[in-house]
Image (cartoon, rainbow, N blue to C red; front, top):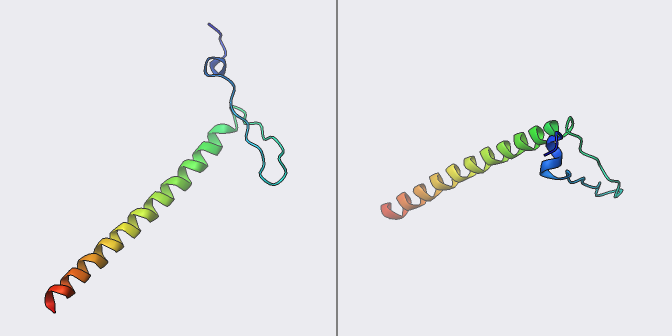
Length: 70
C-alpha cells in the first residue's frame, strides 16, 4: 500500500482548454476550489430550476381554475 492518497485512486484527469487545447493540470490544492465553484453553480441552477417548476405549477393551476369557471 502506498502513502500517496491519490495513488490509490489513480491519476487525476487533466482537462484541456477548449480554445487552445492546452492541458490544464489539476493539482490537489487547486481541485477543491474548482469543485466548490462548480458545486455553487450547480446549486444556483438547481434553485432556478425549482423556481421555474413552481411558476409552471402555479400557471397550470390557474389554467385549470379558468377552465372550471367557463
